Amino acid sequence: LYTLRFGVQPFMLLWLGLFTFQNVARARAAAAPAPAEPPPPVGQSDVEKAIEDTRAALQRRDYESALATAAKLENAGGAFRQAAALRLRAGIELSRGDNEAAAVFAGQSFSLWQTADAAVVAARANLRSGQEDRARNWLRRALEAGAPISAVRSDPELGGITT
Image (cartoon, rainbow, N blue to C red; front, side):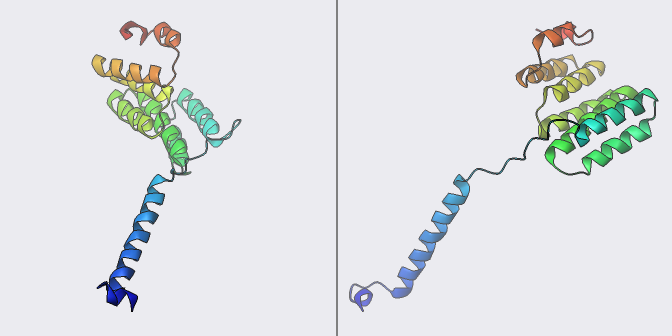
């Protein structure tokens, strides 16, 4: 009766209450931080094992086994493992001489998990492809991601393009 006396409909009050509740719920959901993927455990992880297995396969020039190891790691789930698998694929393509594919895989890896080694691989692949400006850009990203400047400058291949 109180609402009718002042000209406010009961359904209007109900609608305004629901509207307010939804907006508050959305604001709280937007303010909550997204859960981050926990870092991999220290020690002998599946990523380290995949790196060892890939290196051994590349030393034997067994590219199919190296690619299978990278695919297995990629299918294990998680952004970290997927980024590591893409870095492995980039290294495999560098070993095979497909520098353009190596640059693409390294760039994809860096976009998932920004590591200095992914940026260094992308720089090396772009430099080998004749893309010196892109290689410099990737070296800058590698340094921003924590690559030691002394290691980059002492690298026989990349040291000549550092600024």
